[in-house]
Every structure is written in structure tokens, then in C-alpha cells.
Length: 639
Image 1 (cartoon, one colour):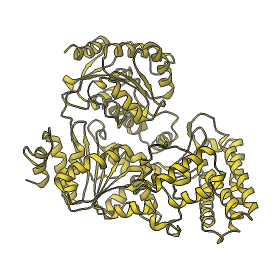
Image 2 (cartoon, rainbow, N blue to C red):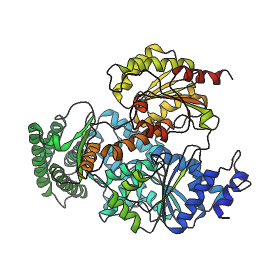
Image 3 (spheres, rainbow, N blue to C red):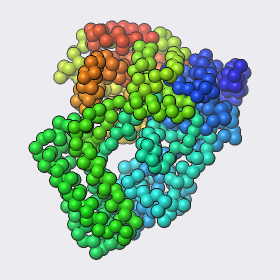
Image 4 (cartoon, helix red, strand yellow):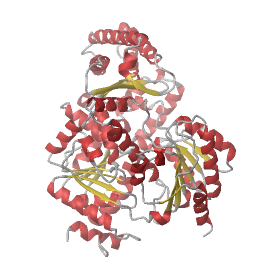
């Protein structure tokens, strides 16, 4: 028997050390497969459904192996949970001498040099920002890690944050006068010495993109890489294998030029004036887009007459700014850094204005104040697959939702890992007894403009019969807001709406209330773990097909058509199935949970692809009669 099998068997290390631990066949099967993958230096893709215990199943083999490992999670929240809770628990039992480290992106660490600069320039800052700066300075004398996450008294988006953290654009690297004391450098050094480093997907691929250009390395060399929540990996990899430039970056550049010229290089009045002109041109460019946040096809928008004029003017002023700044090269290290950044932005801007290159999607996204233009590769299979094959590492990809109709090709082909071993592990939960899937009859069509009124009526009935909590998950913000307006008037219990507070705060309020109603869109479809009666009903408004306006999706669909491939069945449908599995996965999180899942979309029964959705969902009992669902919700309360 292997070392890993000894850990999970009845009477093994985990049974002896953890109160309530129960051996699970699927968990042992997953851990043994990972042990074999590490030993052979191969790739493994595992779908481990909710309740399998996948976290311990991958942590145990890497703790017992002699190899160094990187564990990458889907979000910073999951990253911290893994590092502060799960990994220390298992390490204490299996490998107490192993060193572990947590590594975040540079924006999460205080930059001591930029803090000094911000204090010098404090007189130029608004009063609110000055007060925030005082708090940061006080905290900076006490922190050991410099992790901004420790600063609970300031919000993540506080105005001072960009002034006291660095980006890859403005970091001075080894030229920084406080390089030896840099919190980010120290975090990297700790990571290099560690046996296991916990990161998130964005940091992993940001580092990969940096290394690809021949520069430094954040994530230390490791023999094993484990991706948890791996269903996110293809899309995140696409972002980092592409290029982008934002109005925020350009405005920060001009603001830093102005501050430097007003404090250190006061004779450079021409540079100050040029930066102010450039600042206005960037703001004028943002005004060419609608006020409300959106995504769009940059190839199309780039052709509009007003946009051509705005972008040509921006490019012209950026080139003039670069030329003016070059006259001050060598006078100050910060100026030299600004010149280098401005030159890089100019080259990138010219690249993004030339939208004729094939194999890429050119798209943009806007916020209330900013716009980002992206050039994203339509496929990362060749690049990422080549990296995996030539890396001499073991790679493990795991999630509760990777397979489509019990097959993995959709995932493995997107990443180019065609030779990977695959493993499908069902949940140990008794879904037939614990859950009911209801597709109510007589629903309005998915595109019916007034369907929210009928959905509100259905939701109200379920909530009335449910003495526990209810999730309403939506595919659009518009439907969310319409339903929120109706339900707030109808219900006599706590109604929480995405956007009213941060995600973590909303989930805490929801759990504490015990019978609340929470309305959310995409970010609440995954990574949310509410157990017991606090969540007994999940209502999904319609099948989560990606928006037809999504430019990246459109580009992939167009590319598939050119290659003679059925885009709907190979791209759109698999992504929607995985998203629905994620949403459905919020309901049953524990062996004692009971609840109802309502999917309010007729297409589950009147379209040919409905059967594929149903086959991918857990084996719950099914009904078309809403009364059966209401009775099921009543049952637990009458026990």
C-alpha cells in the first residue's frame, strides 16, 4: 500500500488526528492518482464533485512527496483559506518540517519607496487621501509582511492604494533605494525557500508572461503544479498570453510625470504641460464610449470616425510626451523609469490600433471611469500545451466542474494537454434523497421582456415555503435589478442584492440571518459555500449561455466557423453546461443538507441540447410541478 493510501485508510493518520474524519473512496482514489502522477511526471485532470474532499486529496500527496510544489487557486479568498486553514492542518499531521509560503501579486504589498514619495508629495493630495496616508504610515512601522490585506481599516479601493503599491510598470527593481527592505522581494525570497507555495491563477499566469519575455521569476521553480478551480484556467491564461492597455495606466503615467516635475525636476515645465494635455486626451478617449460599463468588439469600434480621430490624437500626444521626456533621460531614476514606461505604452498602443492581425480577438471593456483595450489570442493550446510538455513537471488540474457529459475534451483541448490522464469522481452525497430539481411548467420564453414578473411570483412562493435561505442566481444585471425591485416589496425577510456590499460581507450577512434572500450574478455562481438551513433553495433564472455581445466569444465563434467547426456545440454549449453545474453546486454542500434547485428555462425540455444540461447535473429527483417543490421545502421544517 502507498504512503498516501495509509493516510486515508480507516485508522490512518487522518482518522487518528481529525475528529469526525470519515474515509471516502473517491478521496482516496484521487489522492492515489495524484501520487502516481507526481511519481511519473505526467498530467492529470480530475473532476471531483462536491463532497469528495478534493483539497485534502491533493494536499496529502504533495506534502508526502519530496518535490517542491505550487498550488494555484481560483481567487485570493480561496488562496488564503488554503494557506491559513487547510494546509497547516494537514502539514501538522503529515510533514511538520515542510515550509509553506503564501505569495500574492505585487499590488497586494506595500511599496516602501512609493510610500516615501507619496509623503513628499502629500501637499498635492486631497485631504481624504492624506488621512489615509497617515494610517498607512502608522501601519508600515508595525507590519512584517507588508500585505495590504492586513489593513482592515481601509477599503481595498481606497484612493491612496495606487500611491503606496507598485505595478510592473513603475517598479524600479534593483535600482530602488530600499530594494533590500522591499516586502515583495522578501515574500518572493520566502517563496523560493518554501517547499509548497500557494498562489492564485492570475499571479501564476502573470509570472509566466513575465518569464516569457526573459525577465524575472516570481514563482520559484517547482516540480509539481496543482490548479484548484481549474475550470477558470483557460480563460485566465488567454488574458495573460495577450496584451492590453488601459486609460487608468495612461493617466497614472501622466499623473506621475506631473508630480515628479512639480517636486524634483521643477525646470521641466514643458513636460508638465505635455502631461496635462495628454491627460485630457486620454479622458476624451474614454468619453467616446457609453457611460455604462460594457464590452465590445474593438475592431468594429476602431473604425468609427469619432473613434479614429480620438485614438489618432491620443497616439500623437503620447509620442510627443515620449519625445519631451527623453530630453530628461539620466537626470532622475524615477524619470528614467517613466520614460521606459511611456515608450512601452507607445509601442503597445500602436500594436492595439493595428487590428488586422489574425488569430486574435481585439476587444474592449469599460468601467464607469476607464476603458481597457485587449488583444487576446483565440487559443492558448499551442503555447500552454508546449509549456506543459517541455517543463518536466507534474501537472494536476482539478475542479468540481470540468467535464461535459462525463468527457474532458472541451477542457484538455483548450489547454493543449492532449495526453493528460483523466479521472471523474462522483459526489458521495445522496442527491436523490437530499435534493429536488424543479423545472416549473408554463414559464415565459427566455427572451420575454416581462418574464421577471412571473419569476418573482415563483420565487415568492418558494421563499414563503422555505424557512431557510434562498439564492437567486441571474445571467444578467438587468434581470437582477428588476427582480430585486419586485421582491423587496413582496417579502418580509432580509433581501440582499449584489453590489449593496462586498461579496464576503453579503455572504456573512446571508449565513447569519438563516432565512435571507440573496440575489447575485456570475460571481455568486461559484466559490460560495453555505451549509445547512441557511441555504435550502437555489433559483436560476435561465441557462447561463454567454452574452451574444461578448467580443471574445464572438471571435472564437467566428474562428470556429472559418475552420468548419460547429461553434455552438463545441464552444457555447460546453461553457454554459459548466456554468450551470457551478450554480447548481451551491445547493448541497454537506451530507446533512437538503434543498430545491429551480431552473426557470423551458429550453431544458424543448431544445435538443436540454438533455446534455440535465445529464451534467447531479442525480436529483426531478419534477415539473412547482407544488412538489413547495412540499419538499415544507418537509424539512415539519420533521
